[in-house]
Length: 340
Image 1 (tube, one colour):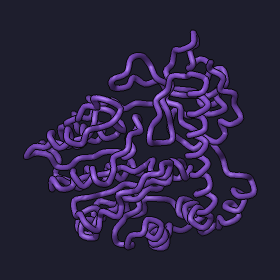
Image 2: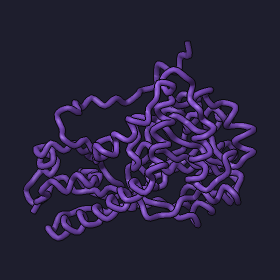
Image 3: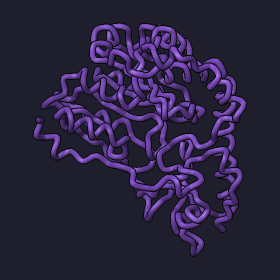
């Protein structure tokens, strides 16, 4: 067995989800579909979805149409997490280095350890990343740069102009757009037509609410897909039920687009409500905000916990104290946020 695996630590959530009405700690969608909508999906399931291997070609074309790319510009992955693993499997990273930020999706560091590559972490000096700091971290052994946009957990967004600055270095740039649907910001997917050193990860796990189905996409130039990424893909990366549910999403896409609008509008309204109470918070470009844990002689973490709402607590760059990462969900409209 590979001895270096003994030194890798994997985080496991130990919180009992059953104790909470709303579980916001894992960035999952908590606002469920109406029964009549979900029943339409259940009615579409056939026995062949269980007994036969999934038909990925049809779904791949539909996802390509969603992102306005050619079918040959993407492969389907079991969530964007496995897309990240596919990238590490493709690049010659052993003994080299990759670049990300100190605040990042934990699996970037896990895969760096698994594939024996050094990871150069660029420090967040404030709540917004300076791309020049990323560029300055590049050296002759750098294989690629991987950034979530918007970032998780900090929620800052890099414009396409900033991403172009990174691409112009010639280093391969991986942009993880897991949360892009919950913003009003533009995707960098169209840039794959200009830059062969760009790969974009997308997922249906977050705003679309299909985390349990494990369906994502890796999008890049046709040459990158054909000559490299497709060589290490799984034969059947997702199940037939996953195929069926994503097809259901795309068939009822206007329903999900309406949810995205509610998500963005509701989050903006909640920020205004809390600011009107004098609550100290930090807004982000993503679908969450940070609320200072202790204020007005209250522990707001306990206040939320008492309302059976699970949240996480973070420390933030350039900020004092602990901050609650409060993901907005339309279901939160049923709760009284009186923190004054």
